[in-house]
Image (tube, rainbow over all chains, first blue to last red; front, side, top):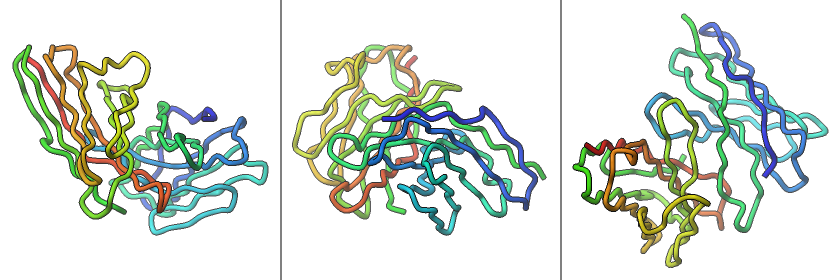
Length: 112
Length: 116
């Protein structure tokens, strides 16, 4: 699976949009971009995933560049409960490639 | 999202004893389950992958005789830490997915194991 690069930490003001970047320049054509987050001492929570089109759900939006070498997770109105480590993971779409390999992620701190 | 439940949430055991952790998919059938370990201030490290009815595939460096994994049904997988030692103290997390239907994996809430 392709490696991802994320900033170590970010801050965001409560109520503002949080934009979390991820670089995955070695992504291959059949690999998806997944985002999970982990609130302290809990299991990771699935947020969103995409292949090449932008995606939106009730939690967030995922913007993938046209060349697919980077993406941005957008939390439109961050709350204090969004403080967590956010993981961007690139993963194959089938066969034995369903496992998720976690990097260090980005610690997002939402400030009041 | 789908619900994955782990039990217990935390456990304290004596050195040399064995501990079993259960992972259940509550509202879907999990064709594949994963077990992770997370040490303080570190990321999740995949230990093994198990498919229902098959032997688990362990990641390099993970002792299969120490971390016994059973995935006997489509809703239950267990991880048994045998002859636990203080260095096995960690946060153990399971993940489950039905990859014949979709591609997301869902995680349990984790089990904090402390070996004294």
